[in-house]
Image 1 (cartoon, rainbow, N blue to C red):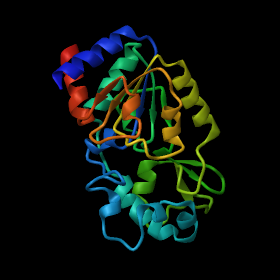
Image 2: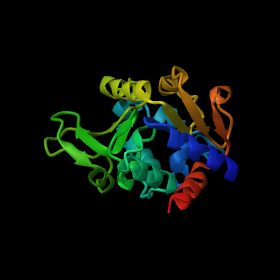
Image 3: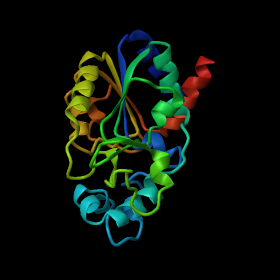
Length: 241
């Protein structure tokens, strides 16, 4: 893997507009479970699949069960790993234009990244469905059963549930970043979730794919690294110190 790290470093040095597009694999090394991995949420025994529970319909008609699942699986206290910190460091040095993530955990911002497009929203933001008052993740975590606003409205996480569409402003930001990129680093994603994966399939510039398993876009990659992304980025951080 060391030779691949050197090749990646050379590609990074040669480019001016680098964008990172990441998925669940970026956060699994922080202890968070993905949906479809070997130990993913879809492997747990339950009356409902993750897709059923985390749907707009389930939220509206079975809100208490939604929040029981949501608190258990999506409101953990994970911390950023080497991948998050490397990306934040590179942004602060002006080497990365931005991060596009399919994750909802807020770990990129916790590590220090500022230009982050959260395609599927964030558990860190919550709002009242009646008056739109904002609430934090701790407000939801520390509430009982269904969190309720001071106005009496139900509080909803600012995440894109199944059955809901991505926000137009997030799509526009992601498209602009990718259009301007001369190097797209794709990491920790199987590129199987649409419409987000479609942003990568439309890209025609230099591309690096870092993922433990195969993706449908592997043949398009100028550099393909099948390895844990946290370990790889830790090597990059060590090389830069």
